Image (cartoon, rainbow, N blue to C red; front, top):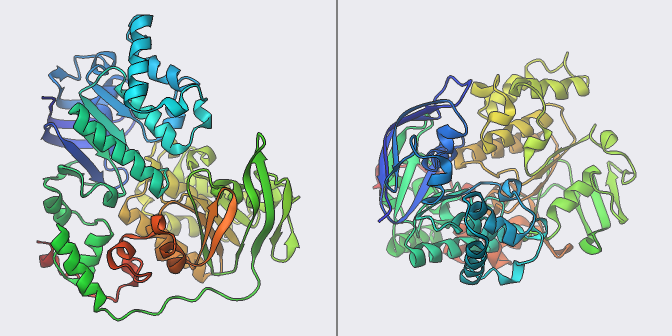
Length: 539
């Protein structure tokens, strides 16, 4: 039986003062384990320590001992550990080293020096066993997010490891694709008898399936480790049903009986009035947008309207056109036809630089827009580009504080965790006081507390009259903050209307509370009446 033994593990990255992991001791036996913790708490670092990338690849100061399936990670090299441990990174598309599905699966075996006949047999076996036949022969960059995740898992399993590590495997997937990938991983876990450790922020997707939860504190120390219900009670945040129970002062819903008790309690609540979407002329509008990639339509007569003080959520499955729509609005993609209007004037032929004076855009992976030597300097670049240095001296510090970035203000942005980079990018565009804010998957890599900070910041921007459009798979965040939902299917607008009702009308997009109650509202914990959070009710 595969096991992991970690004894007093502490680790500091090169040129860092603060440890990423602190005096960590734990044992993992065969089973399915969930790794939880805030952004920057050391989850990705722990996964890298278990496969030897820390410290062999990253360097730094390493103390303690890690024994993985009988191998000491300080003595064994990563190529040797790869026979026992498979790692799937957070961004699989950026980690692929080949161009096709079969080449990617074969790569690790080629590095290990296995013979060609053995590699071909193993690839064929994996493709058949993991039902990857439909994507064989296709280019990796032509696969959907869910298909890329499946290929990444297959490549990690190619050398027959007994331990599988996954870093945010569903972070960039729509609800249906995420459910498919997680179900597949659960089947592999049972069929192959793997010890699996999954780092994930969206806890609701896994909470009912895992054997144990491992929670890391902010300083990379072990906060709790044990049965899901016990760890959830010890954590400062949890999935929506846990947060709802805390808001209402009732016991945590640890089983079907607990969920039914919570549902009954919610049925007796008075329904708070829904927030009305702002009226008036839209600040940003698009209509009839059409764009194709290599002859395949990504947008087909699509459009939207966003008014001052309004938040519009654009939802849909991977490949439905969400990102392309936002890129057409900012000008990074030139539509084949259609119109884009800003404050009553047509801008679809304006260059990006001109639009960016009034429209701020944060892409799905914000590292592409981080160039400065420090987080503070990222905000300074925006201020200088907009001529606001003299009038916004305190604005940068305020934003850094509101987004929980004050402690990393002097750090190099690209060295930060993915969730921290996301917040840096948002702060870097907001400091320029845009009239319109476009965010592509803004909660990617963010823990629940960081999402609350981001949500509070968006609410403050809404109050200032900023028009906000968000492309997202995160239905909980959309329901909590959006006035309006636009749902894309195959590049077309399939639905448009009030956020809670529109999400409820599309069952795969329903929130946790909507699924529990069978009603459009309350859609999120923010819809519940203010209550006294009873800490004693956690047990």
